[in-house]
Length: 466
Image (tube, rainbow, N blue to C red):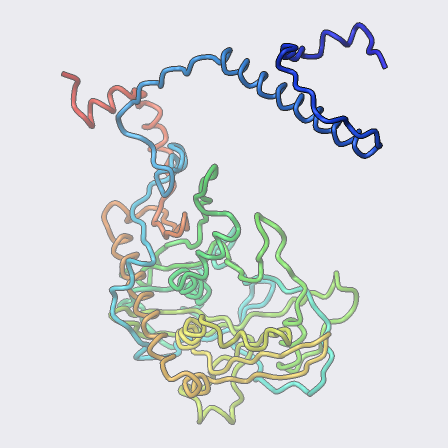
């Protein structure tokens, strides 16, 4: 079949060998198979010649390689770590000191000594306080069916309309048992202690990295204010540390997603404290219950601490003789049947340290399967030590590092440049930093500073050019 004339220029002309070089071979079979095979061989040879001709033509017309640009030597920005952050990330705060968890490994172990309960009270949802009336723990019935309720995160110690230092001052004055805080070093909430322990053992840092809040390629770390550092008039030598943001392990979502509020913990806690369960539509299963506090005093290493501990219920009175202290707290929670063994995870040392620092006598976990209570875990401090003899030693190592962290924070807060300033403990890229927002006077002074050029910086670092 003849091709149209407009398509002929698009074909490449193949060179034809001279007639003298053509060799005659045996006659070609006239079968259909033989014809197709020789036709395919001819087409393949023609395609190969076209490809070779095209490659040779491309090589002849290829542009020459451009000369390499001269290399510049001098200071460069690091590709990872703190210095990857932008120049304006900390232009609104003063950073007085920062701590890394690895720096605390050299501190000696510590344990709780000179324990004493100095006050206890009950705080109602309207903010009023009354005498302590926490219920006692009672075992739940077997095969109990639970409904999920709306669980709120722990209440902040310092927020709008609430001051941790002011609350401690008033509560100790009203409910304290003639206890003087003049020789106290640290006044802190139990939630703040748990957050610090999570940072020391790496759990908090791992969770922050999983949420993408650390330094990584193309992104700067998030700065999270964790605690407010203040002072009390009745404790002139002490600093107070209260939470301004709660780290909730259950919130495993990225960004600022809502806290997963639906949990069996709400009704389980009401059952073991002898209260009615919450029912109705899931959107209204919310409990507005009072919060019970115990204020404890003890020594941790060389520091004297006063700790405010929220509790749900206490150990039964009949068991006080078998406990280290009377009226110890009971922590109540639930877990899915597949997670029943998670209590023996590598973070058990941290949990045991929390029990000692919060004077928790027993952990109670209800094992739930499809809404039914199928098992109950009731574990005291002695039960944990019987199962893992090295647990107490592991907890003392963590508590020693906690004491070292608190000691360093207090040393920074007592410096002349920090006294009288608003101080926060901030998490930034796996570090805890002591920071203070810039005052209005500092911001006005900054506006009068002239801009410094890069050349002036280079001359300051490397000296003037020769």
